[in-house]
Every structure is written in C-alpha cells, then in structure tokens.
Image: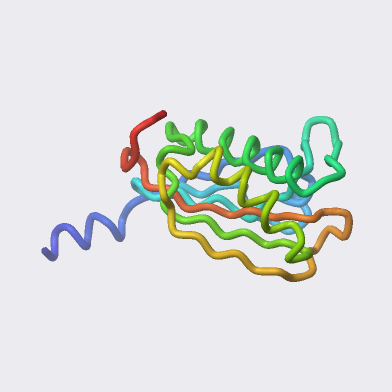
Length: 141
C-alpha cells in the first residue's frame, strides 16, 4: 500500500491549453492531467479560435463541450471517460436546453452532475461547463 501511495504522489502533471485569452489572463490550464485523472477547467461557449459566442444557451453548451472534447482528446481521452460534470447557468430557464445538450453529448456515460444557477465572469456567457474524466474508464459510443 505504501508503494502505491508513493507512486501516486510522484506523478507529474501535464497541462493542456486551448488558446483562450482567459488562460493567460488568470494563469490556468484548460485541463490538467495527473495519472489517469483529467481535470478540465470551467469552459464557456466561446470558440477560442474565432472569438464567436452562440446567442443561445444550447449553442453555448455545444461549443463549450467541443472545447472540452478537444482538451480530452489531447489527453488521449474523450467524452466517454467523463465521470463528473459541473454546469453553471445564468438562469434556471436555461436548464432544459443545456440538459438536453448534455444528455446528447455525455448522457451515455451517466456522469455525476451538479448544476448551479449564478452569475458568470464573462457577462455575455449563459453557460459554463467543467468536467472531470478518468482515462480508460468509459467506452466510446
């Protein structure tokens, strides 16, 4: 048991970046990989290559999940390995639309989920999604 815990303590982390200006501004990574754990930062629905933001919550959720999926692929993973989802919405009115997108994209993995309604750091954004994944824990669709 001691050898296993010592091995876990010495695992190096890998940082994954998406090109978001927010990553540079706040000094964080889109995702951090430690062993088989992948922690993806809260991700808004901005396309960081084009700067475009969909107008509706469902479109923003789709874009956020696209960005998250790219980060997971860089970690040799995918949405199928997601074990936890945290969703932040600016209004409870957005719950049905965003929940529908989540069900389509990650519902097959049946991850743990928390949804909170709150203000977001980027005023134009309606949704922010954060996930945790476990490499190799899921089966691709």
